[in-house]
Image 1: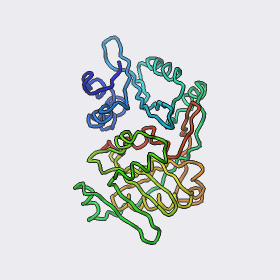
Image 2: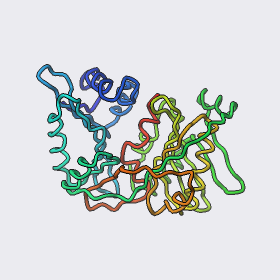
Image 3: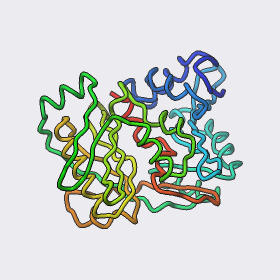
Image 4: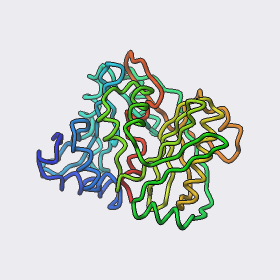
Length: 304
């Protein structure tokens, strides 16, 4: 079955299945996430059902036009424990695609299968940094009551904000090659629309996009993607970690392109996360901020 809109059919089968395989508090089983995901024409959910018409397998796909090429991103591919072969048709669907993107896969066999389907690995590095929460009560209060937060560091020239203005959207569109600005606005949405922060150094033309939310009920800071010189990107992520600490986050998860990762390897506070692969197939001109084409950050945007 294919879900393209909240008007198509009831969402209960997806919610029940996601609660069973991801957990009751998972973002995948959240009606708010599903309503957002299916509110536009960017995302669809494909499922397979057993003889009793119960969902037993699922994959989600997002369609993005980047540098005038259509790209389909696939994620949340999962089958329940008793119907191992029921997800094969989803893989057959991926195989037919001229261009496809797998934002993150940690299963080695599945990673190798995507490579057999024509995908190659993108050079992203996955880091984690533990944070010591030191809640800034006035700032936390503003965040909780959904007041916008904007700070500016005069020394470094770095700006941090969760007020996603049209100017920010236009800049992200230009840097990413994603010309559909409505897609970017949709991609930046979250619970209360306050969880996405943009950190920018105009002097060095560097941007970091982060989401502050929850994973397994723990406050998490997620670096979705970045652009700029390694040293400046690292400095902006450090500032994001300070913001996360002020707002109660206990860990920062950062996905950084290898070209920007040198300074992260030097800093021992950032630990490499092994075994996660990012894959893409197609003759695509890939710009910076490519992770916006995938689901990275969804859990922090809509979980908890």
